[in-house]
Amino acid sequence: MSTIYRLILLTITYLITPPFTNLVFGQEDSLGLKVQYSPDALQEDFAVLRSSLEDYHIGLYNYTSKDKMDDVFQQVAQSLDQEMTVLEFFQILSILNPAIGNVHTKITPPTKMWTTLKQAMPVFPFDVYWSQNQLYILRNLSKQADLSEGSIIKSINGQGAREVFMKMTQLMNRDGYNQSYPVHRSCVSFGHIYAAHFGLPAFFEIEVRTPDGLDLKKNVAARSEVQLKGQQKARYQSDRIIWSKTKEPALSLKFEGDLAILKIRTFQESLIKEKGQKYKAFLKKAFKEIARKDIKNLVLDIRGNTGGQPEPTEFLLTYLLNNPFQICKSIEAKVAAIEDETYFIENGSVSYFEERPWQKADTSFILQDPKQFKVHQPQKGQFKGQLFLLIDGFTSSAAGSFAGQIRSQERAIIVGEEAGGSPFLTVARIIPKLELPNSKIVLSLPLIQSTKNVSFENTGHGVVPNQTIRPSIKDMLSGHDPVLAWIREQL
Image (cartoon, rainbow, N blue to C red; front, top):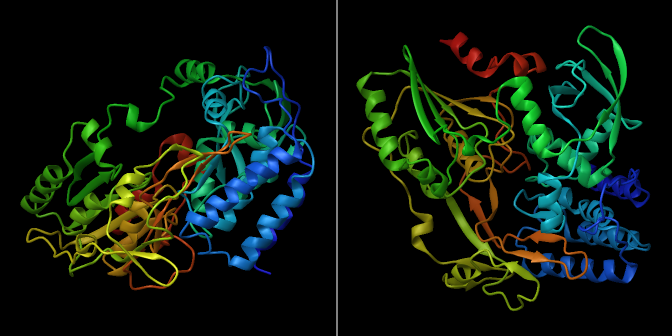
C-alpha cells in the first residue's frame, strides 16, 4: 500500500468522528453552518462530485491508480452514513485532495459561507510559521500583548499544534506528492483553514513556549479580519494585505555591484497590466540594461509566484536558455465538449475550450494547434552569465513549469525550497466551477492537461533546489533573507 493511500485511509478514520469544536455564534446562523444534511443529500452531492471528476478530469489518475482512487471514493461514500454539517462534509471531501494530486483542483465550502468566513467570522488571532517541525507565532494579532513573536505553539484547544498543522497540510490540494505548497498555504491562511477543518470557537486555549523557554497557557478570543487588520496596523505598523493590493510592481530589477536581482511576482498578464507594466517591454529593457552594465551574475527571484499564462514564461526563457526549447510535448483533455452544465456556476471559458481543434485518441482528445508546440529560439541579447533561480512552495502552476525548463537545461543554480508546481504536468487552463446541489460546496474542475518537455523523470515533486534553504523563524522575524545571503557568499 502506497504511503499516500495509507495516509488517506488514516485521515478518513480520523474524520469520521472529527474533533470538531462547538461552533459559537453571536447571531442567527444565516450562513447555514449549523444545518444538518441527511445521508441521502450528502450521497447525492458526492455522486455529482465523483461523476464530474470521473467524466471530465484528465489528470484524475496521474498519481493514484484508478483501482486505488475507486477505493478512496468508496471509503468517502461509506463515511456519509450520518447527518452532518456542511463543514463536516467538506472535511470528508477534502480527503480526495492528496489522492488527486492537482493544485488547480479545489473543493471549497459554499461561496457565501467561505467569503463570509474569511472576511467577517472570528478566527484564530495569530499569523503562524512552520519551521523545524514546530508551529510558531509569527505575528500576534490577539489582545494578549504578552504572547511573544517566535513563541512555539504547543497546543490549540487541547490538540497538539503539530498534529493540527500536519492534518491541515495532509488535506490540502497540491501537485503530486508535493509538501512545500501545502505548508506555505497553511501558514498564510492558517486561521481560515483551521476554521474550515476544526470549527469556529469563540476562544482558543493555547499552550506556548516563549523564546525565553517559559511555558504559558492562555485563553485568547477569536477575532474577525477587520480586527486582525486593525491590530496589525497598530502593533506592527503595516497593512494586512497581499502584495498585489500594494504599490509593489509585478516586475522589478535592481543592481548590487556585479549582481542583478530580477524579481517576477507573477506571470499573470492581467495582473501585470493592472500594475501598469508590459512584460515584453520591461524584460527587453531589463536585459539591455544588464548587458550594458556587463553584469556577470543574475538572481531571478520567482518565490511566491503562483503562475499565470505560458506566454510571459516563454518570453523570459528566451533571454535565459542557451538552447532552443519547447514547453509542451502534448496537450490533452478527457472530452472535447461539455455535455451537461447543470451544476456549473462559472464555466471557466468552456466555450474557448470547445472551440479548440481536438483530435480523438485512445482514451483522450489531443489538441491540434501548432502554436502551442512552438520551438523557441534564444534571444540575441540573452544573458549568458551565472544565473541563480530562487524558488519556494508558492512557485506553482506556470512558475513551476518555468522552473522545470531552467532545470531541464541545467541553466541555473537553484536555491530555496522545492517548487510547489509540477514541472512535468499542468492540469489547468480551463477551470469551470460546479456547485453541489444540496450543500452548495464548490468544485473547481480543470479540464486540460499539458505535458511538459523536460529532460528528467516525473517523481511527483516540484523542482528541487541545488541548495535547499528555508528561512528560520528568526529570519522571518528579523526580515533577513538567508537565500540571498547564501548567494552573496558565493560571489
